[in-house]
Image 1: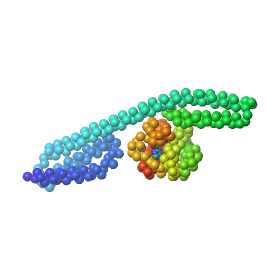
Image 2: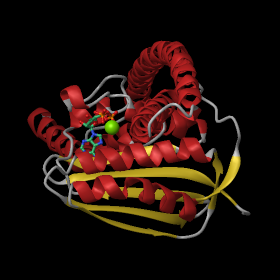
Image 3: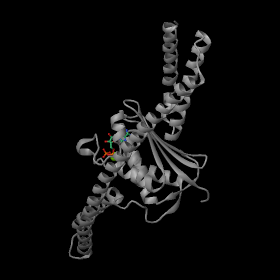
Image 4: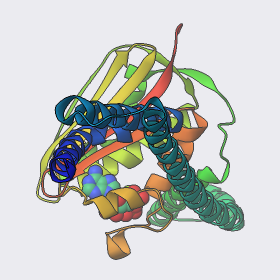
Length: 322
Ligand code: ADP
Ligand code: MG
């Protein structure tokens, strides 16, 4: 007798719930799996109670306790099951893509380790012989200068190998306590010439705090990120680096107002050989960064807007004493 009205009531209720759940989506998406399951179960239980109560109170439809229980419990149980299946599937998927990513990195690491070894040896030998030749008295000063330049170039090649290929060793060899402010200053010093060349204004500010890591590797992290930021601003801009303490965490925020990245590019950061710089890029810089940050028990967060700029936040556990 109330068929139509009851259906209308149910439809409107469902619409209201649909709107509420759309609003709650961002909150829901951030919950861990178990809370998602509880949340959806409770929400559906609430919805069933609401509809049953509405039908009973507004339309005086007799509702027995059995009907009430079976309706609300079956609905909630169904949703709990569906959410569980969906979430565990999602988790499996993300685990799978992480494994694939790790395997790619592993392959590159092995390759890099062997290449760096094979290339370094002849470099060192050549440098040694050049040095010997340079000590001879039969050579005119002009030629000694050439030899010196050759040696400098070899050192440069060696340093490129060292900087790009050390990620072959995932764990820092010597773990020290690093003064974050000093490390930031050091990285800024390294990057100043490149910034000047690109008319990039640098600003840095940091609280003094301490984190654990290896200074050489940590410099690689900062310099790689700063270098990318400068390269993202081909016609100049501002680059700021900030070190702060929040609760028991040290935070380094690096912000540029360069070309930015779209979602697709942002998600591919750290994938070996992903680069938008064609022949100028190696696509290894961010992979090294991720690898080192991970080995320092840290995490990395990237926010970016195409055309507006990029903000990279590094987070590390704080070391209470210096
Ligand atoms: P490479 O610098 O050799 O290209 P990276 O691994 O350092 O390799 O960076 C990968 C890619 O990520 C870059 O080619 C660039 O497209 C993008 N990227 C990294 N940092 C930034 C940034 N600050 N702004 C815009 N794009 C960036
Ligand atoms: Mg780079």
